[in-house]
Amino acid sequence: MTQVQAIDVQHLTKKFDQKLVVDDVSFTVKQGEVFGLLGPNGAGKTTILRMMTTLLKATQGSVQIFGHDTVKEGRVARSLFGLTGQYASVDEDISARENLMIFSRLNGLSRTAAKARTTELLETFSLVESADKSLKNFSGGMRRRLDLAVSLITRPALIFLDEPTTGLDPRTRTQMWATIRDLVAQGSTIVLTTQYLDEADQLADRVAVIDHGKLVKIGTPTELKQQVGGTTLQFTVAQPAEVNPAIKLLADRLHAAVQHSGQRVSARLTAATQLAPVLTALQQAQISVSHLTVQEPSLDDVFMDLTVGKN
Image 1 (cartoon, helix red, strand yellow):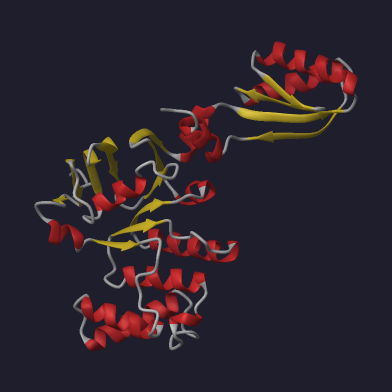
Image 2 (cartoon, rainbow, N blue to C red):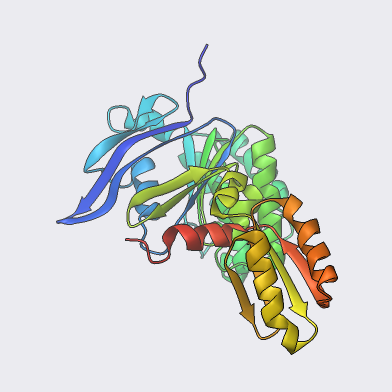
């Protein structure tokens, strides 16, 4: 039996007046995966997210959540997901405990069930000690954790996280990453938009790169990095007079462009097997090198390669 996709997006298009913001985007999200939406500011990823979560009506195209059309079966579709936005939707004038109780009751939980769920979420998100303090005294990280807790009250099978760690310090970001991994381990499906490429690299099973409203590329982080190019070899040439011979040697051996800045030289390897012969050739040519590094492509490289200067 074929498993129903968590999300099925088909030919999604959005125009504001005559401006095309999202241009015929299609993709699916599998159950149990973390799916990342990446793109420059203004690329259309937040508009796509808003259409998927029924906050914005599409000009054309369709979205299904676990097989339910978000237009024809909007109420059912909305009941199957939780949404955490970039800014906390909670009430600053009351405590975290009171916020969770109110949202629990609004989601249909009885008073007893709401109290139990509130206690559980406060413990899960390390907010017990601050549970009865006014949110005005909360740090940014604490507020983000509370906002995520609110979105998880009904234990949704699908969670949309719109830039969940924006503005957080590195330690709190790491804590949020751990929380997201725990949610996935418990069976949740997550759609993540983020401006942090390392975050997508750490968390996402697959990534869709959006630029100028179009889906530019989709794949696992590893697949995308492999498409950008090979490993980068970098080293420092000991003597200035040996820089040009080193550049020529690399160009001849690798058949690739060689960059240099002063005595620092770099070139792409298309295969790991190229490294040893290059180092042997440098040694035979009596070119002394130091500070040698071999670096795999990053999602930053993917992002730059797919979006910068593309129209």
